[in-house]
Image (cartoon, rainbow, N blue to C red; front, side, top):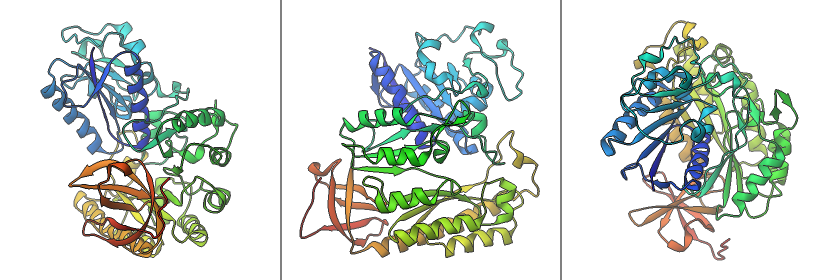
Length: 463
């Protein structure tokens, strides 16, 4: 029995796809093992949002070769779609699979046998995009299976299972937006979705397991409903349908664009929903309207502030996470301070801070002036500090409240952690009975590691 190991870089969507592909391997008789457990095959699912993700991929290939020198190494995902030739030239890589091809892994690579000395025949290599002129004889080892991303029109259902307490359920893929900093449309193709009926069926499959929480994920989750280029359903209708699901305790929306977070979604999930939790992650990217326009975002800061105010008016305890990019081309000190002050004044709970990095074939490369790297890093540090302050304040506002905590299976130093419905990370003494269980507890104090400590209530409710 061949052993196969998986490693995922990047977003929750990637995790859902890796997990689905891993199940295909186990169904075919392969043994899934840890990365360091001398696998016969390594499958690395990549991200290419930042330059750092590219470097991580190269490092993983080197580590895989050290662990198991004769193993077959296949690279898939966004980085593979964008830079197949670059990956093919990495020593040790045997196959590169693009956005659509990763779901045809067994059709394209039936044996997973390493063949270092074989040149690639023309019939084995699909068209390489991104205007790369590729000669098959230039490739010493890796077979490239990367087609035109515009042909990636089929939606492939995916969900993670077995690795975490919660499941990431993919409901949408690709993106039709044209943000000037982003390569995702080039890497994943146009926006497309599953049907509500199929999502419900997948959710019912998940409900048959021991999973307590489903996280809805996609490239542009709120754009759900596009099939074959036509909008046939709406994300709000999916939300309402999922809220009737039996066998699941919680549903969380991973991320949703502010222009797609409608009043009806906010009001239903926070007022009427049975399963949806009070937590939104809403990308902002900049608090400067000038920069938002340069980024070609589909909203201005006034809409973003309105969405936050609407949420907090209904549920003051709702957790709101924010994505923000610092050092975008053209961002002056005044623009950054405008963003900083905007975020400081907003009633939000935490930030995900991204330092802008140049990506090939994006419009942002032509925007001037370029912000020096050391200034980007300084601005990033300032926003990380602000994020810590925001998180602490949000936690403090919840001290004394009674919350339902879903405990995870990670144990360290005799302690276990979990999350409340409004996304506060909780720490407690390890109890094997509590793993993957929801327990009602009172939030008592914040420890030195920014984790919320808890104590039992007078009446304990265990679900």
